[in-house]
Image (cartoon, rainbow, N blue to C red; front, top):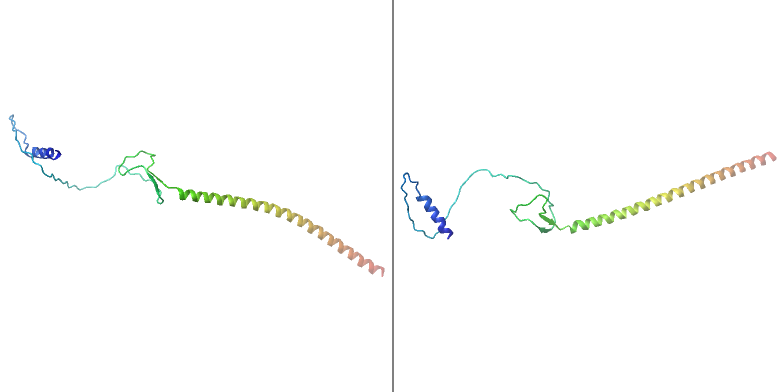
Length: 151
């Protein structure tokens, strides 16, 4: 049916003449069934009306696709989602590593405070021992000098 309509329109445009006088000319043509072939040749440059530059993920497994090729979309509309299992696992691992590092840091601070206290005690012991050695040296010197004076 569509072919017949197209054929009728084609014949009408070919044989249609604009009357120059008030007389109307009518032509009748028999419609036949056939293949209509048409081609158009053009040259020129194509350009987009608007271009959108988006930052899409370049790897991963596509989880959902909510838009089709050629479909009009709105700003902010989700076009697709990528499976985030790998990234979630990496985030969990990084979170655990951070917790371990924080615990190690806290342990280091406690060890540092303990070492500072031990250092203070050791310095005190050293000062006491040095004072004792000095006192013993003075006593020894005193004994040696008194022994010489008595002899």
